Amino acid sequence: QVRECTGELMRIAKTNGIPIFIVGHVTKEGTIAGPRILEHMVDTVLYFEGERYSTYRILRTIKNRFGSTNEIGVFEMTSAGLSEVTNPSEMFLAERPMNASGSVVVPIIEGTRPFLVEIQGLVSRSAFGMVRHKAQGFDANRLALLVAVLEKRLGLNLEDKDVFLNVVGGVKAIDPAADLPVVIAVASALLDKAVAFDTVIFGEVGLSSEVRSVSQVVSRINEAERLGFKRCILPKNNLKSKDIKTKTLELIAVTNVREALDAL
Image 1 (cartoon, rainbow, N blue to C red):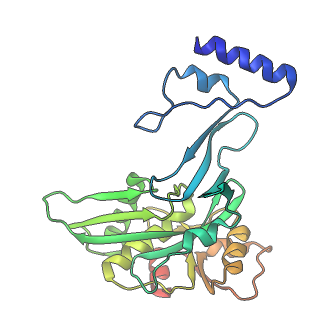
Image 2: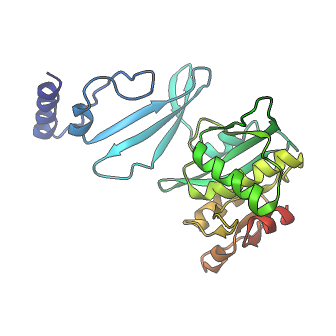
């Protein structure tokens, strides 16, 4: 029944040259309810995500036969309906606390769109025999790996600590450039030393604590400069790009996590 109905809708769409939206239910796990064949037949699968008590909604593309699956749209629920958020960076940073340890800003790329989000880290002594590494909006396995890098390569004592990480605003930070900000957020929370409010950080971290270059560095830097940030910690290899031009942003290049911590 699902296959035949969807097939008929596809024929109508292609015959008349019109788009058709099929609205479906989702399960408690967040996947589309019912037979998976519906997802295979359609051209695009869109998820409309949002927390129950937040006014912001994110439209995310899970499957796209004719384009990128990394593009997202940010909307705000108002009394007049949904309105587009034209500047997501300002929205994600609107309630950022001043001089709070564990708070780091990172310019991430979703599709072709750069925007700045806040990553928050919290480290506390474990009350149980087994430590916990919990992450909201970031891969928990990746967090455990980065915590191990901090312990082994930088000698920070995290073996009896619970580590919690949160990407503010309901965003999922899958960009490799979020590695260095996550490491700095955890170290900042552990040492209880705040990162300067006007600083942005990005870079991929390897198992030897080296900081590797990332893509679309010019877009990231331009977005940070546009929002008034003064300092940027970035991988040294990214400075080789001849397209980088800044007027007010100080660029600090690092080759490893230790250099990033010293610069901060």
